[in-house]
Image (cartoon, rainbow, N blue to C red; front, side, top):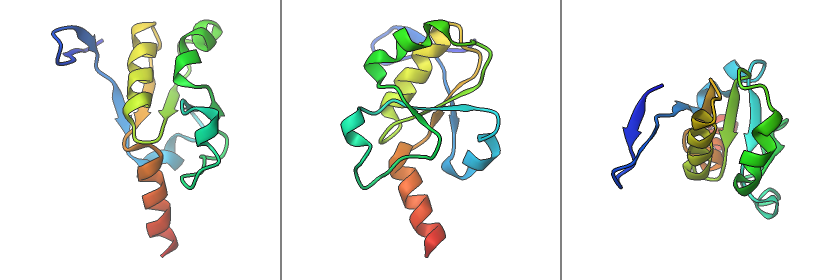
Length: 116
């Protein structure tokens, strides 16, 4: 596992990131976890179909019984919370916890460009 500094002198796991244009390539292999709070889901950014909503503050508890070898894609509004979630899961021994770079903002923008 690669380690990086978090700006406060502590080491934290480096995380993998996925660009929104690569979503279709991992849909069949990754479990999609949306770490936003439930009240954020009905907003204009929407949800990625099939993503499970497990808020970041419940993620550690929820993940206790998960298969640590199953690939996970973490999603939030901007990629910050899902990045923290991916780092936490990596530190708990998950082999492939990936952050969606730019989160739902990037997904919304990409979808709008596709529709234009």
